Image (tube, rainbow, N blue to C red; front, side, top):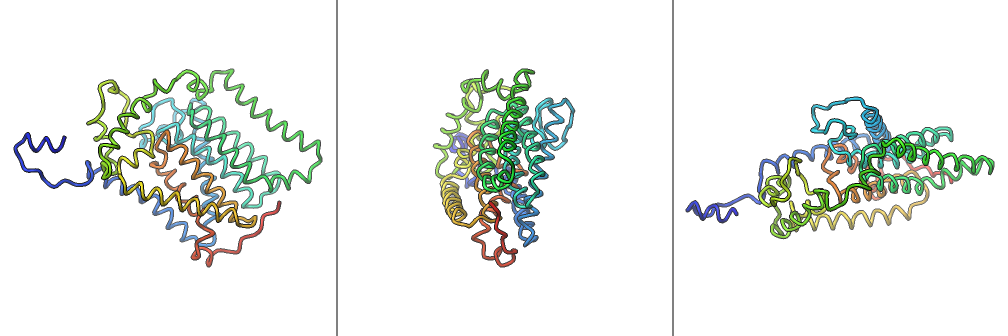
Length: 363
C-alpha cells in the first residue's frame, strides 16, 4: 500500500522507518520504564530484595482482589487512568482477564510468602481465606481463561507448599487432618455452587453461552496471522498494531468495540518485531528452561521456593498471553520482572555475594 501511494502521487520512493508508527513505537519503548525501575529497585534493596518484593506482590494482589470484590458488590470505583467498562469487575486493570491472571498469581504468591516468612500454622488459615477471595473474584470477573489460570495457580501452590504444609499437618491428629481437608473442599464447592445458583458466576455463563466463532478475537485471528506473514521478517514495529490492523480489517469485523491488540501476544510480538523478536523469544525460553533445571537441583530452601514460584508464574503469564496481552500492563510488567529475578537468583553471583545465606525449609 505504501509503495503504491508514492507511485500514484508521482513521487520517488522515500526512505521509511522500520515501524509503521514511530510515535507509538517510542511510546512502547517508554513503557519499559516500569520493568527497568522494578529491576533497579530489586537490586537496590540487596539482601532484602526477595522478601520485600514478595511482600509487595502479595499486598498488591490482595488490594486488587479487594478492589474487584467491591466492584462485584456493586460499588463504583472509577479510575481516571483506565478506559474500563462500567459494571465490569476488572479491579485496577481495564481488562477482566488481566485481573483474573493477577489474582491467579496471588494464589501462588500467598502460600509462598507464608513459607518464606515462616508463618505460624494459624496464619495458613488466613492464606486459605485470601485464596478463596481470589477465587470468588476470578469467577465474578467473567474471565473464562481466568478459571483455568486459577486452577493452574492452585496446583502450583499445592506443589510448592506440599512439604511445608505436610510437615504442619503431620503434627495434627489424623481425624483433624481429614476434617480440615473435607472442610476446605466443601467450602470451595459451596462458594462455586452458590455463585451458580445466584446467577453471579459470569465466567461459567460465558463459558457455556459464548462460542469461539462469536468471539471477535478468534474471528480476527486469520487476519492477524495474514498480517504476520505479510510483514515478516521485519515486522510492523512495536505499538503499531492498531493502525496496521485498521488497514487490513475486513468489513465483517467492523463494529463499535475497539480491537487494539491481537489478543494473542505471542503472535502480536512476532507481528511487531519480526524475526528479531522470534530469536529473542527463543533465547528467553532457553534461559527459563535452564533456570528451572537449575532450581530443581537446589536443596529445599527459600531460593528453591522462590525460583519455583517464579517459574510457575511465568508459565501462567505465557498461558494467558495465548488469549490476551497481560504482559503489556504495568502491574504485570513489574510482576514478570520480579519473578524472573527470583528464578535467576540462584545463578546470580552478584546477588549471591550480597544475599544472606538461604535457610533450609523444614519438611
